[in-house]
Image (cartoon, rainbow, N blue to C red):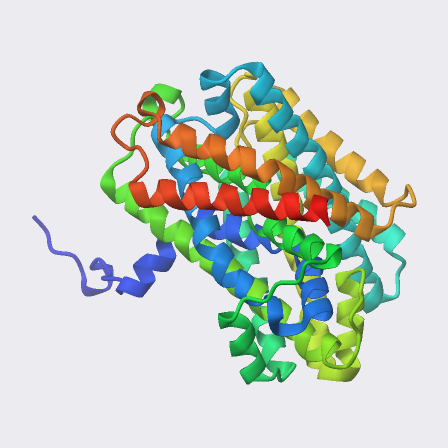
Length: 428
């Protein structure tokens, strides 16, 4: 056997290099969680309550990681997306309300994100937001319809880097670190409508139902990309594959929680401290940053809005399409398919994008869209989390790969906390 030349010898990657190479759907899902509507929610939280809601990042991380890992394992082991698994195990009366509510919530969220991106571009270019709305809609729809899944996945992975802008912005804002640590470690509660609306908004934004559908669907897409076309071929996963998925999900959710944490801290250090306790959009947060934290913070925050929207809007439209297509049992819904081979799947994407765009011209306030999408997500999440826990604990679905006791406990705690927050909001 001939020997390899020195420059062709296999490269031994470091443990850190192998870790980052393994990141995929979980990283993209976590980054998509910090979309413009999420940035608005976190900015509103920091402006209204200062550092006192930073503890929610510590609360949400293990819960969202546990649920997203269940969704990842469901896709890998069953070979189906979340809606497909629900369709096989539960009646249509359970399946369709969940999927249709996700479609409605996603469309409102998508509209709010398009509005946030367009507002940001208006700030930096002077061109009105009404011009940017259709530009972003058409570009992102074209990306989903005419690109291959492999190419989209690579683009999304690189787009996650834009979120580092919000970590840098927090340090430029020079927060009170004593207040930051106190807000992180000492939970603060207020029995008021405004407090619980923000709390439900944070939980509904971080533990969002659309991410459940997207995570499971992307694991299926990854298998399709490896040549596993049928459900039978995709069923099952090795220990190595499941461990890689766990690293991916934990890494993505930690990154998402870290960005959330620093956005709240930035808004608290600039807006709340200087008496600006009420904002309606992330654009207002960006505009307020300039005199308080300088041009660097302003530009990072503003351009980050556009970058996160480029990631978040396709995920919202795509997850809605996966949910409806799998619920209707349309053949092989996939971003790898050409439009003529999956017309219904792509039709859902186009309709969701079109309605989201129309909402920006209907005179609806961006905060109204954000609020209702957060409320819908907050109300839909508890029953969906319960479904995810039940499905991934079902031997008929998962075989020997059912949930660990720890995962089930975290799943039930997640459902209980989100349900309690939603009930408290309704009471107050």
